[in-house]
Image (tube, rainbow, N blue to C red; front, top):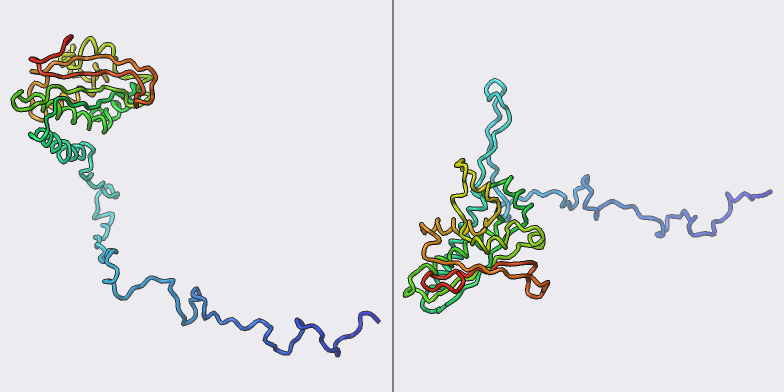
Amino acid sequence: MYPPNRSDGKDEWWWENTSGSDEMDYDYDGHDDEHDHEGSYYDDNFYDPTDTSLYPSYAQSTPSQAPAPGMADGPAFPMPLPAPLEQTDIATKLDLLVSLEVTPLFAYLSTPSFALSSITVPLYFMNQTSFHARFAARPDYALPLKIRYWAHVAAHALAMLRRPAAATTLAEVRVKYMPWDIWASMNPADDLHAMVETGVWGDETEDEDGDGDADEQRGAKGMAFRAVWMALLDMGVESPGEGLSAHVRFVKWEGDLDKWRVGDELEVVFTRKEAQPEGS
């Protein structure tokens, strides 16, 4: 009959050999398994150092917190009050940057080691839409930080120019008033052609209604230059425009990107009134 009875037959295949040879799987006791938490073998899955001095980068002490008061003992509003904000205001950091870098730089440039006759600094105007959005959110910080930084640089250069002619060799300060980016070139917040006619000093008496909304009426017109005048006032200069003249020239952009320009610019040349250029 088929299939034949092989119960008494001899096994001819090694995988059917039940004699306990070494080819069979050995008993795995898990002595190399570091994830075996049940045995007494090596296990590094828990971080429990006995000597905390070997780990100085970790906080050794945990501040103790007072127990939360009960509903009867606590205030009516159970949520904790917000902690006071740290002194991380951008204006504070900008003042620190100016005091540590800009002021020492111009103090060094004023030494007899330099005989500078002209200084050129950049100043920027921004996109009108971006300015209105920033002005609506934070009126005191409508200008970006980098523009306010360059306003401080220009103020230090003008303060150096205001010194008597015998005290400095500086004869002029050139300010290149250029767009902040391509969007500022497409929709500028300033009317450059009007600034050629009206100048850059601005009119501090534009508040016709007397309600203190002069900044709102002016908008972004000459905002960067107003930041320069405010920086001069903070430096102790009572009348920023006194003793200086400004010659404003419109520089048309011809589409040349090799000169790192993205739009029309203004070139403003500040000189002492006794040495003002033609056409001032």
